[in-house]
Image (tube, rainbow, N blue to C red; front, side):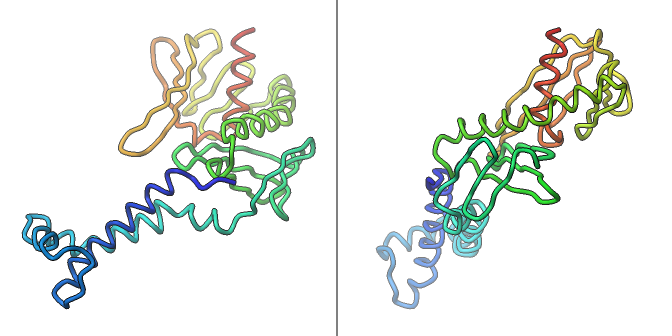
Length: 233
């Protein structure tokens, strides 16, 4: 188990904010956490009052929310084991045969596995070789769920993946059919804006682009694997 780098960054930022705010607040009482001249310069600046007022709340926000994985890291078991049966973390086991869905949260770096009426939230960045871990878990879930989906579609059923469905004739999105022969391209688009990571499925059909947030798709990796095989054929 590893201490996540981004948690270290936010934790340090929160501590610094609180320390500087306390230095400004305590200096008039004769408690000097920083050199007096430095504090006076901060107080006289245009943002000095705002910093003294909001420094501690903002620092607590960074520590408790943005660096919230610190507490998960402290309470989590030290090792995770994968085998042919499933995932084993401390006293928790998630068996591959019991997994009903997988959702990827890109901004939080998590895989959410639904199994037997419960959910296991795997924070990838807490473990070494996170990319390999994600790849192995994802492939295991695909191998368990994909055959059943192929059989359902072959029987003429419509299989839902959240806002997008698959049927023998094509894809159904917003209650409209996108026929297989009308699909010009499919691709995944990664984006990072204002500190938020996202990934979208872009479907180009009949000259029109449809965008779907991957986090809204249930079993997105299974869907992508099915589409890759279906369109390749």
